[in-house]
Image (cartoon, rainbow, N blue to C red; front, side, top):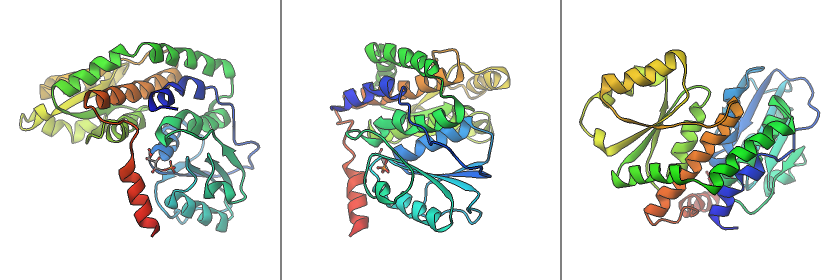
Length: 306
Ligand code: PA5
C-alpha cells in the first residue's frame, strides 16, 4: 500500500473493534511505546482520568510498577528495544499485561496481545494502535466511530484546506510551531512528529495555558520570528480562547488557525489528528521529499542492535 493510501486508511482504522478483554482491577496504568506507537498512549492519557496513567518512552519502568499496575506495551513492529525491555520488566514485576503490535518479538512474549494489521508505517497505523484504548476505556459504541469515520472520509476525499496550510508553511520557507491546548496537547505534539517524519523538517509544539508562561516571550521578539509558522487549533473556549486571542495580540504574532470539525471531543480529536497527517504529507510533496522514508530511524535501530 502506498503511503497516501496508508494515510487514507485512517477512516477505516477508527472502526477497528479490538479491545483489551477482561481486566482485573488495577491501581494505575503504565504505557510503554516509542514514536509513532507511543503517541497513541499519550493521546489516550489526556482523555482518560479514572486512574493515574504514565507513559514511559524509555527502557525501564518506574519503581512503583507492581502487580496492581496495568502495563500496556505498544510497538507497531514489535521489535523496538525500549518497548521490549519495558515489557520484560513488567513481566518480572508481575504487572497485568496487555500488548499491541503487528508481530515481532513483542508478539512472542506469551502475553495477551492485540494484533493489528501489517503493512503500515507505525505513524500511519495510529487508528489501530489507539482504538483498543478507546474501545476498552472510553466507549465501545460503534455508532460513535461510524460518525467519526464519515468525518474523516470527507477529509480524505477533499483535503484542499490542509494543502493550503502546507503551502503557507512552504512559501514562507518556515518551521511549523504547533500550539495546542488540553485535551489536544498531545495532538499538537503528534503534528510536530508528523512534520518531522513526513515532511522531514524540524518542528516545535507547545500548548496553552503553559505557553503563556514561556514561549510567549520570544514570540513577542521579532528576532527570528519570521522563520516560523504558528499553527493553532480552533475551537477553544473560556479562558483558553481569550489566551489564544490575547497571545496573538500581545506578541503581534499571526496564528494560522485550524478549525476542527465535529461536535464531540472524539470527533474533534480524530479530525485534528488527520488534518496534521495531511498538512505534513502535502508539505513533503511540496518539498519533493518522500514522506514515507524513515531510513534514519532504521539506521539508528540497526546500529544499536550490533
Ligand atoms: O514513526 C515511526 O516509524 C517511528 O517513530 C516508530 O514508531 C518508532 O521508531 C517505534 O517503532 P515501533 O512503532 O515499531 O515500535
